[in-house]
Image (cartoon, rainbow, N blue to C red; front, top):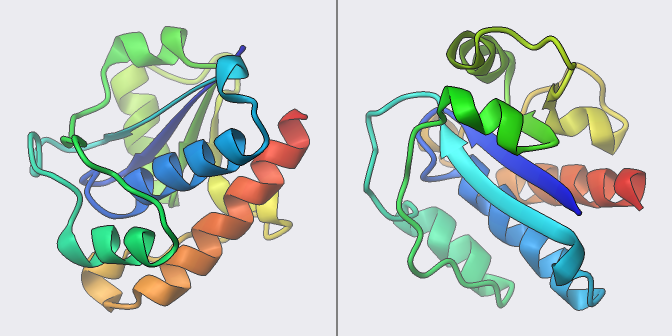
Length: 150
């Protein structure tokens, strides 16, 4: 079983998009039993909030639902619980490592490293307004991650 936690700042745009895109990819291959997939924030700002409406609409355009999602902050225990903690940008990496008390096992990584774009970040559509670009980046990263794990 592979366990993956996707991480962004607020857990209402990028990381839930990654969570539900990856869940969809895994389900389409009939591999649900082999994966635990979740998402979390490095901040408490959006705790309890659903997926941001434009992100929810972008997922729905592709037939992917995200009902029932409520933003939550990452905890120190998540580091032990998940095999990989996949971040959207370098600030997420720094904050996730701070919350986890470090990254001794090298589990905290950037999503776009799996898309053949090492060091590149998924831009936050909360600020850019470009949910199409976020969809493309997250989808590429999730495809690469799933291929790497399989």
